[in-house]
Image (cartoon, helix red, strand yellow):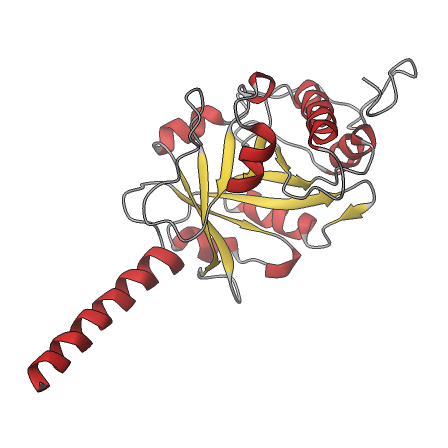
Length: 254
């Protein structure tokens, strides 16, 4: 009985160690690891983040048409100084005019050569129909692609992807950053034409330079592949604001 109890405790301890490694630290089997941060992580020490082996970061910039993350400027500057590959994301509100949301993001985010594409974080319905969400997301994506000269990344969770974007040709061209927690193996989008580029596998991770939990991600490829995703050169920008012709139809009318 004692021998059985001992073996049970050993196996349990091993399972706990494996779970801790898979859930809270770097995911085995991937060579490129990253984090994403917002005001929840407050001021991030990116020098320590880089020392901890993370190669890229997504930083929350804006939400809707009026909210700006109050730690964005500080963290953006710090990430730039430490030369970690970076980009910014916009938390999309389906109820709010996508033209105004694209303008708001562009007013606050200047991307440079070597930065990853901008990100549309879309994960809430906000009482809006799926078709309207598709239309409004498409407007934001097209405006931002035109502004920065590179196709944005779509961030969403597993269920939202299948409800809104699955098997939709209009969104095939955009890289997917998928949130799927609790999976030991890589998530399967179950979409013949599509594979994810980034995988956010936990929101309970940790890193040096950050107090508290942080989202952990992996990139599906090598560091060279990640660098090839980045903005290749300077884009011509004097005024970051997007100028929208008055003749465009109202949101949701087409």
